[in-house]
Structure formats: structure tokens, C-alpha cells
Image 1 (tube, rainbow, N blue to C red):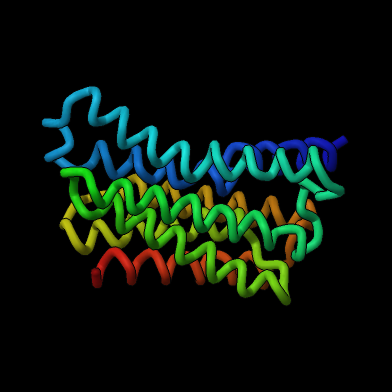
Image 2: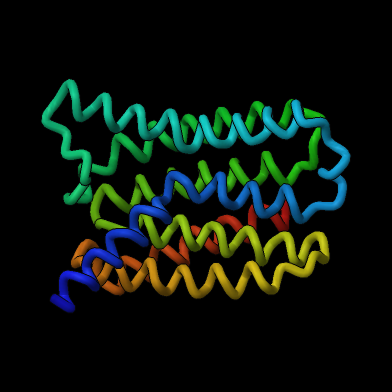
Length: 205
């Protein structure tokens, strides 16, 4: 009974903090933390949110569902090679989102955020050719990298968000290990790779 509760809890956290939804979550944190965004019209806010949500969540999920419908593709992506095409397609979609954001009169942080996410997906694709790195951990690592980067770059106090993100990262990583979806090395690697790419991209570009 206890094991069932633990597994259901682990599945719940894995579902809620799916890596495809993390970019939208990060955007919302940044958007409501930057003082200048309070001046944006409702239309501009919806455009920004729409671009990030559609290119990082809707289109990649639709692609995976389409693959599942027309082929023998395993939507649960248990094997590391099952993740190759989704990573490539998602990297392209997210990069297109970054290019759209770069054309808008908004802070560079938004396009940099999506650019870093697309670079991370490309790196994950390369690693996934040989090894099953954790996508969930990568999503959380990217979020942490974002929070630390804008803290250093813009001097914002995001201590509360950082603490929560660290706790959630630990829970999500533990969940993936408990469900035997990944080893601890795969989880740590996912966190480190995405954190590093996100932090360096935002801070030095």
C-alpha cells in the first residue's frame, strides 16, 4: 500500500513538472519579476505567453502524439532512442519561438531563454544518441539556471523561487529514480547540463 502511494506521488510530480511545461513556468516567473513588464498591454502579455507556450509545449506534444498515431513510436519514450526525434523537433520549434521573441520590442531575456532551451535540447539529442539522460531533470535544471542567471544579471531577489525550485528539483529527480525511469547519474547529468547552458547563455549574451 505504501509503495503504491509513493509511486502515485512520484507519477504526479513527474506529470505536473513535465519538461515541456517548464519553459512556460519559467517565463511566468520572469515576466512577473521584471518591473518593466508591468507596463505591457494585455495583448502583448498574451502574445509573449502564447509564443512560449505554443512553441515549447503545444507543438512538441502534438508532434509526439502524431508520431504515436502514425507509427510504432512509444510515446512513453522508455528507450533513449525513442527520444531522438522529439528532441530534434522540439529544438527546432523552441528555436523558432526564440526568433519570434527576438523580433518583438521586449527584453532580450525572453529570446535568450528560449535560445538556451533550444541549445539544451540539441545537446540532449546528441547525448541521447548513446545514453538516456533525464529530460525531467533537464527541465528543472534549466529553470534553476534561469533563476540564478537573472538574479546575477538583473539583481532581482528571487530567493523564494530558487528555494522552491531546488526543492521541486529534488522531488522530481527522486521521483524519476524511484519509478526506475532513470539512474541517479542520468538525473544529475540532466540537471547539470541544462543549468550550465541556461546560466551561461543568459549571463554572457
